[in-house]
Image (tube, rainbow, N blue to C red):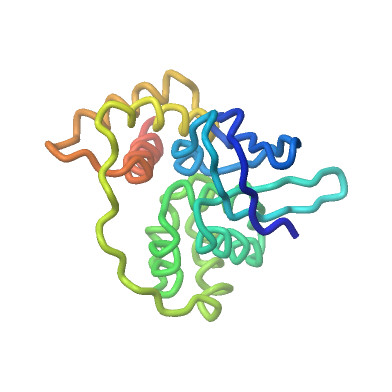
Length: 199
């Protein structure tokens, strides 16, 4: 298995990036929040998981090993493939997902597009015993005030929403912000929740 990649980022899209390793450009699928932290022309290191199918080899990249391990754990549940596992990590931090599974917080899991109540209950049932106690994290660093709009918009389009829907969600998130701007992953989660409520 390819456990990590380190190299120069040559391209960034809404659903991932190309990282050049030893002269070979590897396409790595990432959550929008992870992709938003990558910049073309700079070096990056990503924890990775290689998903092998009959017709393809797909590499998924994560900011750290914790996210990669949760991505792999989620796929051990019935009906959860890599795309849905990545969507979970696009909406929630790994510690939030583990807490939700461990405590049976179905409502938190149903905030993920593609997971209904029955699917969330199945995740809890199948994974609760595999999820151990999690430490409480401190507050995440704030996002750069000027950059978050483009990053969130790109992330939403990468998850499948139209540019118009992404623009509308970014506008609504901006209207709800106070003086302090939260980190980009939190802003992205807010936008996804708003899109889930739109008709």
